[in-house]
Image (cartoon, rainbow, N blue to C red):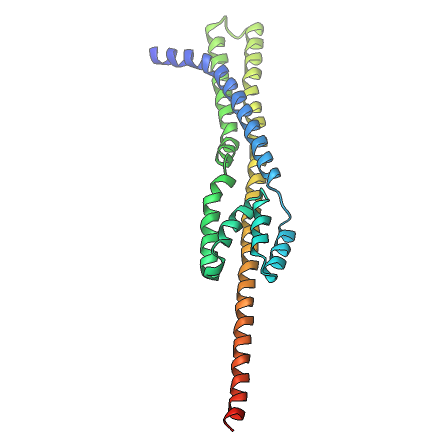
Length: 234
């Protein structure tokens, strides 16, 4: 009985603590959501327009212009591509390896805070339910320690249970924005990774096309020289 009494005493205090904990987690969640929203908003770009501009500059051989273009952008795509462009002359394979390596390094920045939001969204309802259970246990304990199931005592129990259910409601209320934000920001992070892949593929395709044109021109010159050689010998 001594252990049970101690647990009941803890339950009386813990019910309120759980509610304050949920409120604190809600404040942290809102702060994290705002920070992530601002992060993605400042780094938003038109990937299609950027790709077209890069291809145009590559065709013109304006590598300095590409460096300035990417350096002036705050986007993660530009940051990753700028690092990979330093390996442009090393060939498509080296370029793609560097691109993927830098993207993996930047993934921590993209996914910052998402673990907290996902964990909170999955577990906040359970925290609220825990507070509700503690509140109900406390209410029935007070009923058993009181004057029996009188109308006044039952009214107090119902009031205490209603207050205990608030913890579950708050837990759900905390979880919903966290889940929505987690899914939204995870989608944005995935879109940035897709943009990096698409831009990288455009650059690699341009590299291969340039090499193909150079090889074709070289073979054409060889054929012309072979055609001229017999005439010279004659």
